[in-house]
Image 1 (cartoon, rainbow, N blue to C red):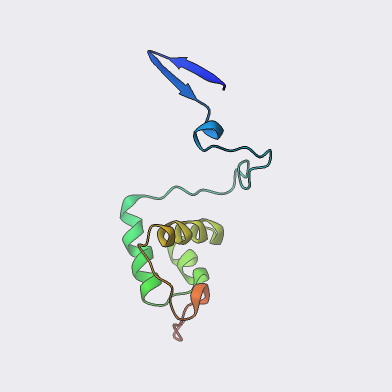
Image 2: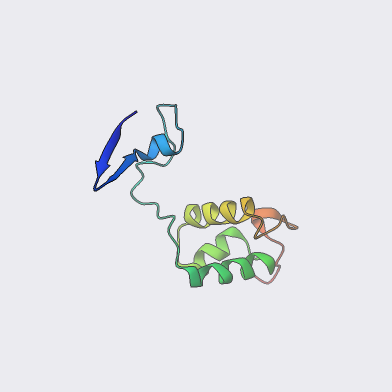
Length: 96
């Protein structure tokens, strides 16, 4: 185990914390992707999802890459903050 002593704490590398045993980690080095969001943005994304907006429309409205929005929606789904919906990622709104 690769431990570091920081102050009086012993820390482990991120891969060890996540129990990663493989040698390829998807998306790890893609500097163009940004999966960080401000807390005040989340309710707007959830509302747009519930109103049937497509992944593409949400990304345009939020001024974010489709990949960033997809990962947020995936995260929200895993945490049961959004539910499956008619049209899935393509949405169900016809006024787009």
